Image (cartoon, rainbow, N blue to C red; front, side, top):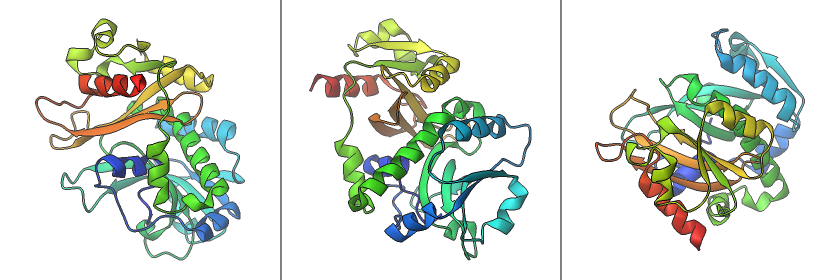
Length: 286
């Protein structure tokens, strides 16, 4: 997992600077990836909903390579084989992050003769949640996260000039217009001073709706072009000193509409803040 910065992690670099590493995937890595069969590694706990959802998502969304599902206990033996790539959930902690937070990342790794898993090249890596946060915080968005991976790989395949640090600038420069989109948010992910539609409308003039996780899942499944939604990566009570990352993504495709982060404290809890809506409103008015 040499590369911890691609795609959403790239976006974290743009705002926080804490996730930057020294490696991005090379053209050789990308060429090798297309020659592999992708092994989808199921979680060790058979009771996790992830195992069921990822099977359904991959069967509907994955078009890049042949694929196969494997059990977690098969990963260690197969990861040394360069004919395979791996879609696998891992635990990540970044050396330059002074909070020492641990995250769950969904990784697309290349197999090969690497001594440790963290030496395996990443094609793309997406932060899903903090390590100790329950899967229900992200599982309903899993299809969108896989689309993010898929579209990012398509992008760098068509634009090999972006297989460099230039990809940072590309994502930053291509934030999309929110004016004609309805933003879906979950009530418990909003700060208490902004946790109703009436409060939101005082600072954010564009359509917004407080919804259930099931409604976001449905919008993603239906590829609703008029819907954007929040992907928040925060500790949710599992850690006191931490950052809260906030990304607003399209339900139809993994278009990025907003990203930012803040350090959690008494005045800035683990939530989407009023200031985030203000920033989005300002951007939408430009």
